[in-house]
Image 1 (cartoon, rainbow, N blue to C red):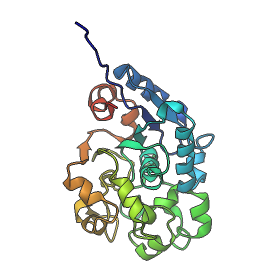
Image 2: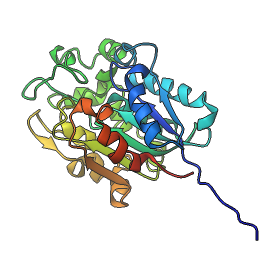
Image 3: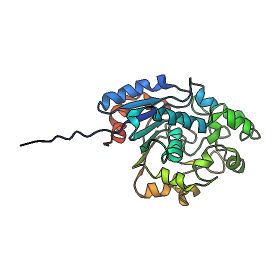
Length: 283
């Protein structure tokens, strides 16, 4: 009697670092994940060359850098799980919406405390000593959406100033585009919904992303004291980029990690027990 044993193949994982980081910062995290998932290929991508690259490169350029890293690895040719930490999760979202119909397909998106709903701090909300944009809060409102600032300070592309929404919609280079509020494209919506799941880790303990609910597509509303959650936002209600559809279909999952921002790549319980179940998928 002939027995055929089928060994399930695993979808590779692409891990992308956060703001002002390089591959060296997340390699220890990748090694822990490799031990937890020994049958899964894990690729660490790097934006630019050095930790300043995520500061001085536009988001569009950072997405392009991620695309090149993915395209140049033949082991990713059939698709991958996108795993992004902080700014890296935002860049992964950009790849999903802008490239998923053209390049190597992302099969699932998993973000770790990423500013998906934008970032703002400085008036009533504190700007922490680490995190995404503590220095940016000190720019005057006349400069934040100028071409010069948007071209030379990459994260300004998703700096969502609730006190200057009209300027934000006109001048921020990335987030209004990904939210389909400007230059609407149905393809971005289809791409966003092309993955099997979108898994969003966030926590009130975060201490860096402002507001922390941005990790779950929440944002400031009118000022930086009032948070509007994902389900109450107009971009959700009108389903501009597929957020409502994914949520209603049970394909968008919000998880409270109970972690601070820096613990995502150092907490061994999270990396060995909590995270693997969401990034371990069969081909």
